[in-house]
Image (cartoon, rainbow, N blue to C red; front, side, top):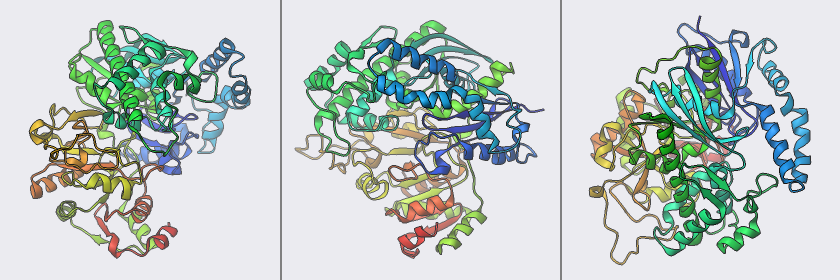
Length: 621
C-alpha cells in the first residue's frame, strides 16, 4: 500500500502543506493562496484540506483522503530545540532584550511548547483521525535538505541550506546518497548569512522576510567598482561580518539587535559606520542605498561561493542541491553555476519555509520509515505545478456571478489569439491548470507581456503590479531557444538562476547617455528584449519546456511563430502586497482592478473593454 505523508510548515511565515506519496510530492499549497494574506504564518488548514481532497484525487483511481489514511504528519522543525535557543540566547545577552523575552513567553508557554497538542487540535478541525495520526518533527535544516535532495535528479549530491535561522542552525552542509542524508557541518545562531542579508533589507527600507528579492533587484543600480561600493563592502567585512575561507562567518552582535531586541540592527552604530540612516519605507531610493544593496549582494555571493567550495571539499560530489531562503537569491545561485564547482546544480523551487513542509514529509518517508529512493536522473517536481486546479464549470460560475463577458476559444485559436494580443502590446492575465508550488509564477498564474517593448516594464510595474518602478521582470524563454538569447543558456525551469542577455542581442545606449538612468526612467532599450533586461544586462530566466508545461510552451511557440521571438515577459499574477491568485474569482478580481487588457482562464478570453464597470464587478466576488 502506498505510504502517504502530510508535511506542514507554520507559525513563522509562508505556511504550507504538502502531500508526499511513496516519496514523491503529488500536491502542495501555500496557505496564503487561500486566505489571501501574503506570507500567511497561520496553521495551513485550507492547504491541508486541499492536500487531502485534491491531492487524493491525483493518485491512480484515487479520491479524497482522510487523516486516518495518512501514515504520518511531519512538521518542519523541532519546537523544543527552538525554545532552548530562545532561552540560551536571552540568558547570554541579559539584560538586553528583557522586554522581548517577557513578551514572547506567554505564546511559547501556551502554544509552542505544546505544539503536539496544538497540531492535533488544528488537524481535528480539518477532519477525523487527528488524535491517532503519527506526528514527526525533523529538524528545520534537515527538512530544507530533504526538500533539496530527494526531489533532485541526483542519486548522490552535496547539500547546502542557508537561511535566517531554524532551531539553532542557520545553515548546513550535508551529503545525500540514496535514501540517506548526513549533516557534515552547520553554522549556528546568531551568526547567519540570511539574517545579515535581512538586516540590509531592513536598512534599505524593505520588509524583512519578503523584501529581500527587492534588495537583490536593486543591487545592479549600485555603481560597480566605485569607491563608495568598495568602502561599504570593506566596512561590512571589517566590522559586521568576519567571513572565513570555508564560508563560515561571525557576526559582530554589537551592530545587530535581532537576537534580543525588536529590530534587526543597532541603528545608531550603523549610522556611524555607513554615514547614512535607515531608509524610510516608500521614500526615494537614492544612489547611496543602491550602492549599499550592491555591496551586501557582493558579500553574499562571496560567502555562497565559499560555502559551495567547502561542500565540494567535504563531499567530493559532482552535484549540489540548494534550499533555504538564501537559495532564492538567483544571482548568487548563478555565480555558483558559473564557477563550475559542480557538474550539476538543483534548487528546490519552494526554497524558503514553505518548502520545509515538503522536506519534512520526504525526511519522514526516507529517514524515519527507511524507505528506499531512486532518483532515476529526473527532476521529481513536475515543473512545480502542484497546487489547485479549477474546472471550466467553476470559471463559468464565476463569470455568471460577476456578469462577466467572455469568448470561448478553440485549442489552437487560444495560443494564436493570445500571441496576437501580446504582439499588439496588450498585457494578458494567464490562468491555466494547477497553482505553482513556490514563490515564482511559472506560466500557470502569470501576467504576460511583450519582452521586446521598451515601455512594457514601466507599464506593468506602475499600472498593473502597482510596485516600485525599478523592479525587473523575468523572461520566459523556450528551453530550446535559451542559448540564442542568453550567454550561458542553462536550464532554469524554476526561475532561480540569473543569466545575461547575449552581447549580440544588446543595444547601444543613446549618445551622451551615462548608462545609469534615474530609477524612474527605465524605458531606455538595453537589448532586443528591454522589458526583461536589467541594468547590468542580467535577467532572471525561466526556461519553458514542452514536457513541464505544454500549454505555456505552445503559447510562447505561437508568439515566436508570429514575431520570431521566443521570449515573453512573465510576472506573477498579483498586485503588490497580495499573494498570487489561485481561483478564477481571484484572477478576475485582479484583472478588473488593474489596467490589464485581457484575461485568459482556460479556454475563456475576457476583454477588459467588454466587462462591467470594475467596482461593480469586483464587488460581486
